[in-house]
Image: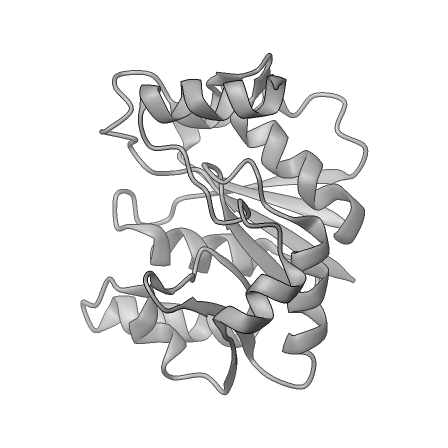
Length: 204
């Protein structure tokens, strides 16, 4: 069984007052676009978010064809590593793809490739020459990464790399990314202007 964990608990300060996870992107909530892209390659979706986001995100996910479960933040506002921890703890799959909710162009074929590369290891993480490790579009062995995140958080660390570097992981380097992924797979939406450009790309 393969799980998908979508991280949606951030405050989206660059986006404005609205929650970008449920912001309409060409007529569909952004988090639903991420989930729809994951659907062909995972057996369940776990949404990590704050409890106050549950109603809006639940509405956005209504009618989704696979099982959807929520993993609410245990450590509110502790950053994406805390969200990864909570999402992976709730995942039922041995391996889980972790994707940020602001990556609506995530390539499902690339996620499938990451699952393959992760087999027999604790993680498969892309690394681009200009953007370093892409830890919020990666595949992890759920229990091992959750344990590493918990230990890092207990040490007062907040960087995902502090947990990753405790694992036996595979690096998916830029040539492999270029071979197996759509160029937009890591494109994210942080601002209203980026949302407008993403909508234009989807509609065009």
